[in-house]
Length: 286
Length: 288
Image (cartoon, rainbow over all chains, first blue to last red; front, side, top):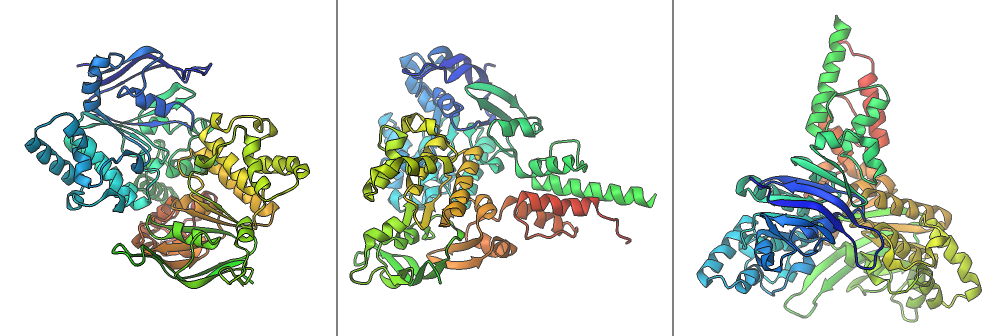
């Protein structure tokens, strides 16, 4: 089976710019996968994401969505129904004055049958936990709620993949938790392919794959525990590793090696502390 | 003597309409000279409303605001002068940039204050240096810079007029880790070198905890907690009730403590956490 999204020697350059922003990017994303894209500001990650539903077209090379080339205008409708994009600012993606109308907007444009629209709008709003707010005006919602409405609007189109471009960065911790829980559910329960850009390490934990971009080039493409082994390298790229990973690395430099594996979350770290202390007590008693 | 303080301030949006909503209730707090304070709270807790009261952009329904112990809403008070002394930097300040060059943008505030052009060059150079950029940026177009750079240019534009109090709403939103660090370093330097007072509004606990001397916690239009970061983070339950999270380092140490190890759990910086853990891990084995 071929990948859901595939880039082939993707090169992109803004018209007036002299340098390529994306330099021969070759990536493939399988249906149902969950990928996080990391990179410093200006590394080209948002530009890359916008290629995945044809908002931006490659300068050279190609992007295939479900084997359809984004360069071909006739594919756009299909591609954009299949791949939805959620942006950073929830304010920028809401068009209607009533929540349910906003969710119905795309379906109405697509000429979907009225009964079907009702059904899909209700389903989508229930999935993101906003059904009770269906008759509210969006401007009265919190940032997290607005972002959930934006996700529902995309879900109503029954996409196979949703792209998130720092979709939680303008939300407070509570809003972030809500959105991350929904994203994970969409992936696990509904098999929606997720590609997500974030600067927040707590959102990286639990993903299958991390792609790190630097100046338009893919420098890492691996499991989180593999990528975060390279603490110094990642920091040199202007990024951070999860806090527990960093702490374990600092301890290692002081001569305390908690674990051979890269520690990614608090439970792993606590467990490693336990084992280390038990080991120490053990050898002492012998 | 407090430099800036509010006394029982209430603020209501949409008064006299069916949409009336109390944004702030009975807010009293003060900022001292040369203090670096952080204000945290979930979305909708009233943070952004409160900071607009501090330089008279909004007028409180009840209560009073004092700058240098002068009531700013007393008849005849010079609000224009207040706004030069209390600088406000909104979220995404780079959205307000419109000049062709970085130099012009930074000079905008100097022009508004009627500062003699002879002094501009020196002040501009000082400001760009404080935010960690060099003079080569002055002739560049702000729109050609990266997200972190343009944010710092916007900051320099606020710092150049040397406000006595600098209030910033989410100064690091949307920046990458390096960008965040650079912004906080610039603020810290500005605080030291111009002996200014800084108030940062944020919901990123990790950032604020690392740099602020004191914290104010807002929830539903009220101040629910005040103190040093260590005091605030000692009370995890209280903080989480307001929709905020304790810094990750603090959470980790609490977890290790719960697992039965004796570690101090009010630590909130990486360096302290490392030392605390080293004490545990390298420590003497206790007889059981």
